[in-house]
Amino acid sequence: MNLSRFPRRQYTPFATPVEKLERLSAALGGPTIYIKRDDLLGLAAGGNKTRKLEFLMGDALAQGADTVITCGAVQSNHARLTLAASIVEGMRCHLVLEQRVPNSYNKKAGGNNFLYELMDAEGIHVVEGGTDLMAKMAEVAEDLRAQGRKPYIIPGGGSNEIGSLGYVACAQELMQQLFEMNLKIDNIVLTSGSTGTHAGTLTGIIGMNGQIPITGIGINRKNDRQIPAVYDLSARTAAKLGLANPPRMEDVTVFEDYIGGGYSLPTPGMVEAVKLLARTEAILLDPVYTGKTMDGLIDLVRKGYFKDCENILFLHTGGSTTLFHYYSDILP
Ligand SMILES: *Cc1c(COP(=O)(O)O)cnc(C)c1O
Figure 1: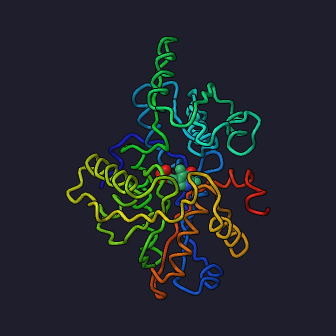
Figure 2: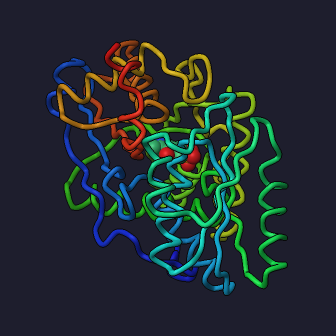
């Protein structure tokens, strides 16, 4: 795979660390757990969207755009990082924010919302849950074009075949690190949300014949919709790369048991996972994505899904800016 043939910006001047979680592994008493610290990626407060934006902003600049439009939930890490990338590229940014929980938008809220205000997004367009976000972004783009601007639309989570190249690149980076560390990883556990992370990593690992299974943990949609969505984006990413051996449907593994009541709604397992990582490793997870994903990893360890002799890698995709928003859910 030759990723250098796609336009790309660079927002992280190093490979994110791979670390052994000795105390967590001892506390769980099963396989050895490693972590890849994508919470330390570049742009304001880091997280997985930074990798996707390297390719998405590269494409936007190649197309001569001067304004970026994207969408997300009211506390979206993706919206925060798209705004940050726009700033460093000298572009304007419009955010379409969906109130997936009714009346959840508050201009004065903390977390990522505070950062939208601090970094001064040019436009914030709040819509009700269930709104057609692509249609709304097209409408915002039309208004901007009428003013002589050149808008570029990034889909939710940056999850199209351009954004997912960021996680193909992560897979390449990881394989090189594992070689240098002389470390054999038997399974990679990651969040399966808008699918760019899962699809990109899967396509990258399979594209390199890495032979490491990927275990996705759902945080939003049930498997009847999530698995085909991951497969579909994997197939499109593989086609963009011209891979002879694209991922198959049976390569897509997702567990749907850790979603709880729905997207962003706290679960007891998430609370336990967030506390355990903070107290054993001083690593901050987030309540919406990585907390639920670590809940899944812990539960799968307890159920014996992994062998004790195995090395499991948890991909930390970031998100801790929303943690500060959940005091009473985590420590009631
Ligand atoms: C967006 C996000 C995810 C999910 O990644 P997808 O590519 O959307 O599946 C996981 N963790 C954090 C912190 C995120 O912001």
